[in-house]
Image (cartoon, rainbow, N blue to C red; front, side, top):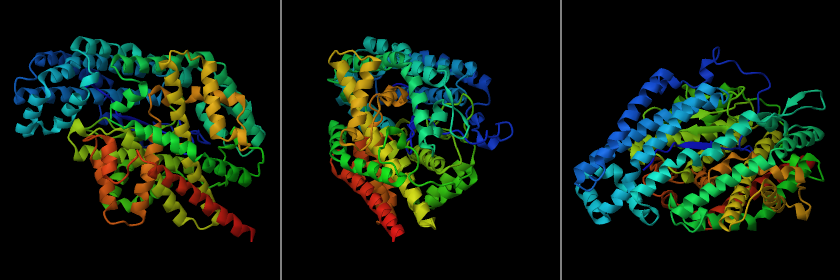
Length: 626
């Protein structure tokens, strides 16, 4: 039972981290307050944050008053659980404020220090609370189940306590657990190192495009210009951007190798047979889910290759390269200012019912989103839903394009999931697993696509949205599974005692790139310069995280189909799954809702959907030829 922030790192439409910069500099926060989040809803100011931190720091030592007493009686256990979870809730509120302040400007030293103070406090909390799980195990399953049965007030803690019992074979003694908790002071170093190097310290190049534009290729600039319509510009962007990453190949290699070693240390010391087993054990995910995903994706690579061939045909390119995967297969100059984007998303969410739409609308229009990119701001998008008593917050880099609309729908899919779970669940079981999280976000994207296809009045516009949907499936299903296969490979290398240099990581990643993209079959050429891409992906610092994008989009496609077809009870079943929060193992929650992700069915259905979209595109193209 340790403090844990609930942060959903997201990607949509092929962009894992960066979101493109707008054509014009957005209005400054001082003149556009509605476009930035209001952190005073968490704490009035930094002084109030420090006061709350000091109060929490003074309370943490009082945890020790319960050491040796958890088995006294049900009343004492309830009192201890209330105190522990109360501290955790307070800590998470502190952590949300400090991380959001840091992420709007990673160059703000004061905000960085605030975040570091929260990390130190979290470590102190974890270390002080480290006696809890070993002591609960010492109390014994029989006595604990008797407490739970005879005292209804312990109901909010039933699932967390039973989870401690389930983890018994991998729980160490109180002293060892204390040491492991204290080690978090250093075990997050690779993540921090990567974040600062990738977002703040690298000197990014500026290149001149064919039209004379000076394009600065930081991560956000790369996300924008990699989709340039001029192919020579795209190639130049790739050459300059990946050359910059290549210069740091050794350094990023050390960073990722350190992370993988850290993962294996944590797994092995807890007596797990592998890092994968340890990562899946937390949510009790059957390893068959991971293995089935990889097997089904590899079996269906011909569908991905079909997409690339269609892309080449529509772009008029016979020799596809990696720099050809980002420009839309159908161009659109249509812009989606923020107000328009909000209206579209709200309309698209109507199938989920009036209550959902009302909450969604209120969340979009309140100051819980930081919308526009600014210098030093963390790139990409995410939702942080850990402030249980306040509201979820969303970070965006909105760019007035359709991808931004889709990303906003995606992130607030997470946000509404958090709202529904927090309203339906007590705090101890409100925080849901990532395994479920990406279902809510990608289902919103499916609803958005269906809405856009209905309102599109021209075949060209329909082709644009269908093309976007294809790219989303490529990026969320096939690309994330490729990442998952890479993660498994590098962890197995370390588990077998093999070193991982930056050069070796590029080789492993390059082999996967070439297989997934059909390099050997002449489908799409993977040049050596892009094999450094592994260094660009922050999700590799969250062990075995990305596979859940792929499993989730398979599940969400199934739920979306039922909802859009008007299947009786489909909406209530889906929303009930979201409201379940973390009250059970996520695999079981999804399975009860009708989707078993340990079987091939959901993945084959998603591939069939991708083929269906390509059929629709080819039908429109055939009609245009007539």
